[in-house]
Image (cartoon, rainbow, N blue to C red; front, side, top):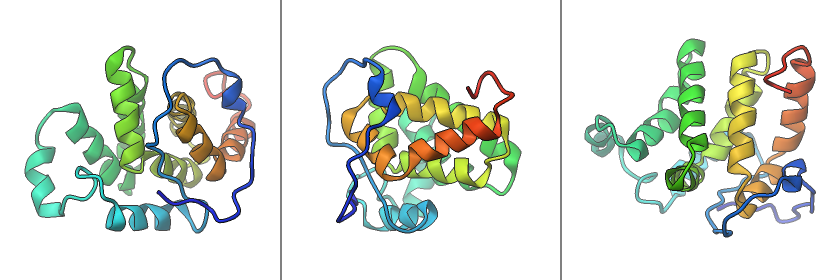
Length: 178
């Protein structure tokens, strides 16, 4: 995990929502540089077994339909596509994994965070600020990821809250984004 040397103590608007569950130290945070640079740094230095696989070793794993493998593929490939339709579909799919009710939701959220998902979501939301659907999926995903205290702090440290506000301002006509 990356932490700013002089992180500001910020209050997230997500913290006003009452969430159940214990805190886990699964947050991957970054506060310096762009999310894109930080994501590359995370992938090259990460010790998580699923995040640290080489491209050749993941190709056989990614063909599997298991949620962890699909989440890995979405984070490593689909969100980086130059095709906005692929990125939008990837954001929707990631949102479904993150917001699925039950015990799996917690596991999926933790796995997304461990593999740099917060940074990836923020990068995509910044890149496609004018795309209403991407902003909707991003806001919902960040909300659900914020259920865990460390992830909530990471979202704040990476300026996720001002990004959500910009998204809501940009799409003020959109009830889903609001």
